[in-house]
Length: 72
Figure 1 (cartoon, rainbow, N blue to C red):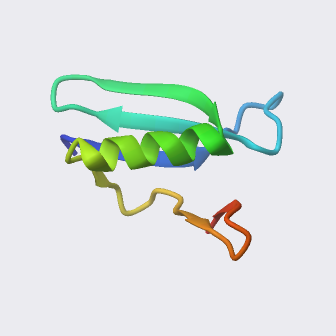
Figure 2 (cartoon, rainbow, N blue to C red):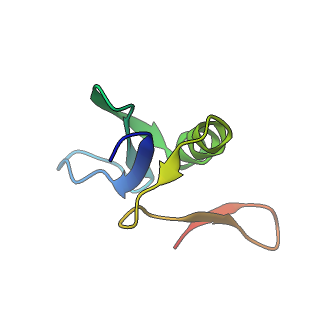
């Protein structure tokens, strides 16, 4: 889907627990990068401000009571 992003857990066998994949599609090209939970949180905020939509199967990151991000 054009102008969308997706966050998923990195399934690579050497990935650490807090390693994620951030993928986005700008309508002409799909790109993905490995990121930390903090990186995924910040990229999601930035892409939302650019008008991108979160894909349905994407992980959702929310801030807990302490302000710490959690994946749901």
